[in-house]
Image (cartoon, rainbow, N blue to C red; front, side, top):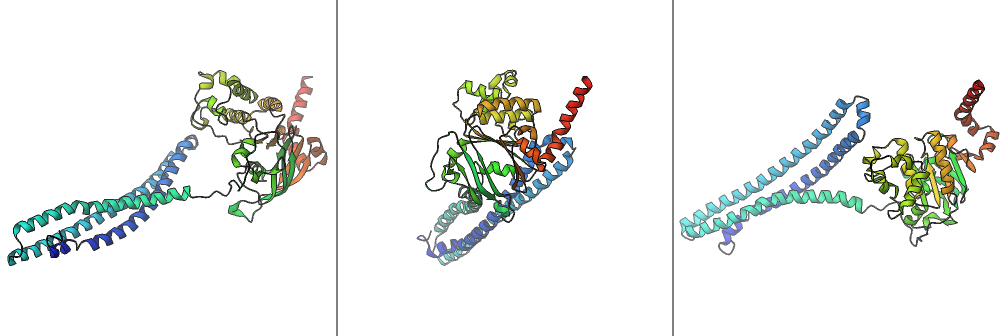
Length: 438
């Protein structure tokens, strides 16, 4: 176009600075709007997920209308941003196209003047306008490209914020892999505070040792730091001071993957996959022999129930184990941990949903399965840990009492008070019933 007519060529490009300016302004607006819209969509998705996951709670409290209003509010806010996005994109494209037609108008006016002056023919002007018509479609596409670029950059930022995140707990330089084996677990003056509340100590000067075939029981009031002890061992967090060792080696010097194969953590809140019973039990060792899987479920007192299922071990478990009761989910989680045959086994209130009789059967079965393991049992129920070799009573992040069940009863302090509240009334009721029968 410039070679055909320099003046008309420059005139036809007069809209380019305006289009460039509008592209920059629109990109900034669209990008900020995309970021805000993605935040709103994440809120909307969270509201939907909570309502679907907690649908029984919603129905139990007759809160359907309230939850629908909450969802509608989040949906309306997202829709408002969507409308704003469309308005910005369309108005930007409209202004770019308008600028193009203004430039074409100038070309027609200048070209007409040149035809009148005899320096240009009608055919030459017609061919020039044909070239400009071809240029029209790329100009329209600029608006769409700006929107796509703004969306890609905003989503890319959110993606790389996650991909580039450096975890606080990671393998140290030169960390060694360790094969699962019998392990001696030792806490040496461990203190800890969560990074988000560094001024509040959760644990203070915790020291104990668990040897193979040795059971440590940990009890205390809610919020005393019991579960935090369990989470420090597989390095979900690192202690603020002191150290934790396995066979004399600081766990920070062990590769995370091998450390977590040495430590089995059975938590109270279990998570199950939408898969078969067999796949859930053998999750830590997918190539385990069938006999090992059965042995693990037998130890967890779940084998008889699984046999009654229509497809046995091939029966599918619903999302997050929805088809199982709370106690069955906990027993399946126990079986999954037994499968690993780890050197350290931690039960973090993992029998809270299991009746006392079944818990006793599980404990008896686990004695043989964990005879070569260092075992930690964290529980609110004294009946779950009265048999432990050593019991630690945690209060406000400190060990205030330690010893065997008989020794702590003899001290007559915090442990004795808890025993009088939990166990003594049951024993008295049992003795009274036996006396009446006699």
